[in-house]
Length: 477
Image 1 (cartoon, one colour):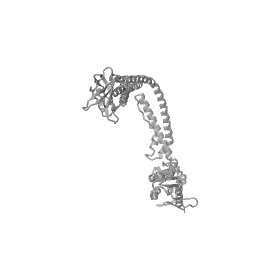
Image 2 (cartoon, helix red, strand yellow):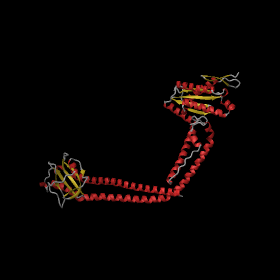
Image 3 (cartoon, rainbow, N blue to C red):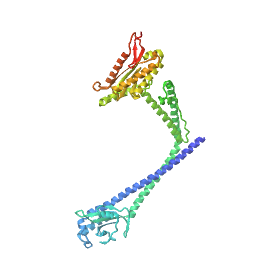
Image 4 (cartoon, rainbow, N blue to C red):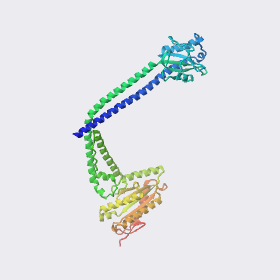
């Protein structure tokens, strides 16, 4: 009971931590969203302000504007420019629109102001801002910060007026109420905050709902995982029963995965919470299944009797060699190894000795040619497929094999000696069209070598002498 209470408290603590993380994430996301939306809204408003200023500046005749002075009021050129600005003031939501000119001393003066209530007089100086200076250099711009003058507090956009030669002769200014601009941003901020609060509320409600259902779901899940775990223990028993004999003959360090599975090792973890219990149970089942899959892969690609690569792996290798031949990059040799007279050993000394001889022969071949290149095909026959080895390399490998055969025969009783026939062929594009041609050539040489090693009379053969050429045979006198 105490253990269950501890699990419940741990689950509750984890839930509170998750809830805090949820709230923190919502606040962070809300802040990011507000920042992004504010930036997007800023760009949208500033784009609208620039559109108005650019359009107005484009519609004013720059050649006429460059000649305007305070004395031109009422002339056709003056009225045309004045009416253009007035149309914008009357039809677009803005505070003021006007045209200014840069003087030689660097100051800016009003030229046109269509405001009906309190227009600026010609020559009245206007407050300089960064956006105004940029416009005087030919680049339309918007103030990043509001500025205050006698008419109020504004954000302003400026666009240059150009004459027919492309010279800057004036600037159109458009003022937008800073309070309106800020209110739009504040409204956007309030909407973002409301959305964050709603998301947090929904998240909290969902969290409590999920928490109320978690315990039932965890209980059902744990029952299924526990059942799966006990099913995996049955596999341990099967592997142990079917592998115990093999383990007796395997040398130390061979097939570690098989030994681990056969001995059915278990780990016991004390879980502090339901989450830990699920995690540890899933991990235990996963580890077992991973070991089983690794074991199955090894069993498929590894020959049970000899510990070398299996016939299935050999088929894949032969396909790969044919592909390399078709691509013109084949460089390999094939050897056919035949352990002869095993029937006599099986009959006279038992299958255990015959199996041990096959296994030891396979391991010696692995030491000489490498595991990936040695394959047990059937019975006493091995095939070696090695890439990058030429005739000289194969001759040297065969000498090493002869030494191992002689060493075995010298250290065992005469009746238990073995005769190994062997032959090899190296791929030659002028002689071999495919992998099978190379294999047939190697098999033919192995058959020839076997006939040289054996002298048959009355169907009986015995081992009488060992030399560098292999294990020689002669007639029974």
